[in-house]
Amino acid sequence: MVRVRFAPSPTGYLHVGSARTALFNWLFARANKGSFILRIEDTDVERSKEDYVAKITDDLRWLGLDWDEGPDKGGDLGPYRQSEREDTYRRFADKLLKEGKVYHCYCTDEELKARRAEALKIGRSPQYDKRCRDLSKEEILKFKERGIKPALRFRVPEKKLVVNDIVRGAVVFDTLSIEDFVIMKSAGTPTFHFAVVCDDALMKITHIIRGEDHLPNTPKHILLFEALGFDMPRFAHMSLTMAPTGDRLSKRTGSTSIGYYREEGYLPEALVNYLVLLGWSPGDDREILSRGEMIKDFKLERLSRSSEAFDPQKLDWMSGVYIRKTDVERLARLSIPYLVKAGFINKDIDGDEFEKLKGIIAVVRDRLTKIKDVTSETEVFFNNEFIIKDKDAKAVLSEDNSKAVLSLFLKKLGEADNIDEEIFKGAIKDIGKETKLKGASLYHPIRVALTGQLNGPELKLIIPLLDKESCVDRVKRALNIG
Ligand code: GLU
Image (cartoon, rainbow, N blue to C red):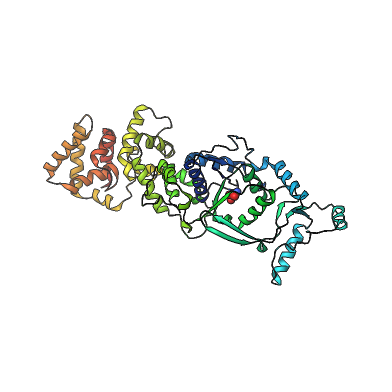
């Protein structure tokens, strides 16, 4: 059975590239009726933060990437946080020590640093010089007397390694380029390499799907799998997602974090659809894919070998497509926090107000790229005192024809009990007859007076969403401005 994992280090927010790694693992698990496991790699105590764990898991849930085993869910092969697995790492490190596959290294960080600098200065390899590989009993005793706590280093065998990567094909490594690396630090904690291998093996991970940036680590991992006598998983190293600038996406760049897109009001399904096409294709030119279609057509072999840049414009386009497909009820509900923040509505809007909001959203839906846009797109429905930013729109109000149209419209409003589409149409017809104006000369003054803009949804759709008093206020204000 397929078992894959997403193994974030909680040292930053979930960023777009990591979310894509999670997505591909999730899709592979779902496509193969396997298990998707969440493992928190928090061995770096100084940089790992509990807040990040909460935010990462929350963002994954928001994206709809649910896991079958994980820290909160449990599972037979847990615990699923590396900080809770230290006994396990120690046990396997002891095993390797007994078998002579690792050795104690007493070199201090300062010594190692100085030696590396020296090697680089004289043009030699900065690799660890293996000086603790075969220490005599006396030498070891001396170090012990000095109270130095040793690290454990892996005795790298000399051989050629071939990684049959599902995405990249056969990748050959010569272990001569790999130094005797540390598996347990002198503080008694595992290194990333050792913890990952123990966990992947013990959690029975069948496929390791991760970013290409981990490819240089893979030979070390293979050596450890072999040394520990574990079954070897398959590897798939995905191309990386680059920033629009061509640089690597950084965890610390705000606009590349999933949280940023979430706050901006992108729909999770739009973001997932955008991410799945970064370096993967369903085998044809479909771009809008439901989750079911993604699962049905997901194959690791279809992952591209070349990196792709994150393209915010394409994401915006896709987001708009999804918004237009989303029912008004959901969009209205998602809009509430933004409109509350803008001061347009109260948090607890009642049934009638919600119905009105739905009407407003229906009118502006096609103009939204993301939910946050509701703030600017709907201001006109909530605020009689909106500012007319567009100079051309403002200019319309100073034309004589406009004043005539608006004065007549104000009169019509005064005569009507209420304002709806029918009354508006009748009023326009009468004003047209009286002023002999038509088209833009007739509609623009009213549009600008009511909405502040020359473009936008049709007036007959807007009018029913404004009450008569608002219309009167707005027209009076426009006559004063002009
Ligand atoms: N914890 C690693 C990271 O966040 C992932 C390790 C792996 O996928 O093997 O980059």
